Image (tube, rainbow, N blue to C red; front, side, top):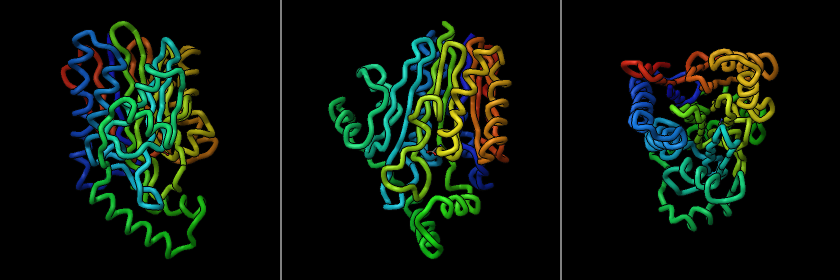
Length: 305
Ligand code: GLY
């Protein structure tokens, strides 16, 4: 039995964007169903779903990624395969359309786990990945406003930036992720993000780090969203996978992992999880997390905030 779940980030989606965000996560699931229905792999399904989200400028991944403090876009992405503990990731990648595909190439075409910065850029050139500008006018306008507001305050360090994020939770909206188990029982997970608004150049988030933003084992897989620094310190997706290894189902693992983070660092977090038996789970400690899922046999995907 196959299952897929995707997320479009934690936080509160403004009222005028809610319908489009729900349609966006539903479309991502719909793009992967024919692959799984035709006996395709969980890796192909995760990549297809995340490419749709990366192309949707509403989400903070690929086109529409948020801008760094310096006004650039540096994207992170990762792909994980459960049975082999395979993992491929890129960090700080610029000027490409689908970071998730490059992350998969790192896993499948190199002996490494994570390429970053100029090395990742060079790898993209080697793989003939075409150049693409992911910066949208809307994101640039937001960046200008946020940066001016930030500079009017006492700028330059994370506690101040975190206070700003509390005031404007939209800062960290829209990391995207997908987790799939195919009908062979193979689990795959992927995550893609522009990171957080006004991040310092060179900042790497949780998304490309195994066990932080993305992880998969033969028992299940997970993709998280929220402030990356907290995910890195709690290894939230590894925690969810460990819970499944100990016998919890996907929903138990998702709830347990978010509770763990809430009870330790207490920052905003969300996670999507699939177990190897076809169960899906999701949990967040924020008002909303855009997500959609489909389990073989359902008439339609469920998509909601
Ligand atoms: N969770 C996305 C980031 O902090 O980069």
